Image 1 (tube, rainbow, N blue to C red):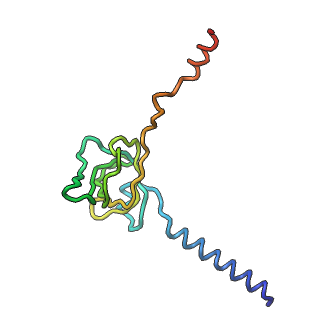
Image 2: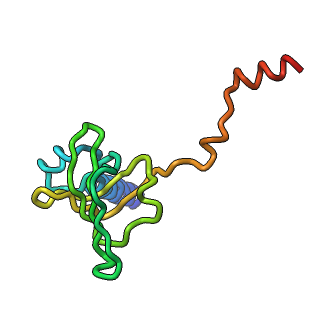
Image 3: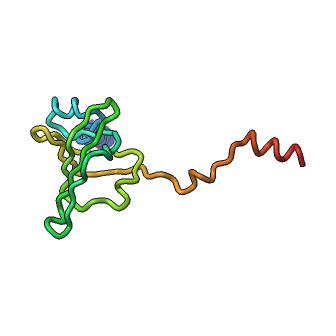
Length: 136
């Protein structure tokens, strides 16, 4: 075989190995029910249950934060995050957690929040703006 053919085969083998390793390390989206049935890391999307208490006491343990969240399918679960409480957490519209179930609790490694836009109240109805321009 030629050296270029061997080099090409090696490059293809490395590319396949990289693709397989990236695919195996990627986590998927699901619900708390899906998280109970798997041992791998999972993304769960939902919103904060504001009627239940947030537990965070920086003087007692600054690296423990727990709360209750409802996923997009309506199932509620206690979430434990080993880290400090994110700023403006209570104002978040949507939460994406990355982690896995341990017993009846979801232990999150990462928390991503969709916070309300500061421009939300500045939205203008386009039909209203056009009718004002037409009257001028």
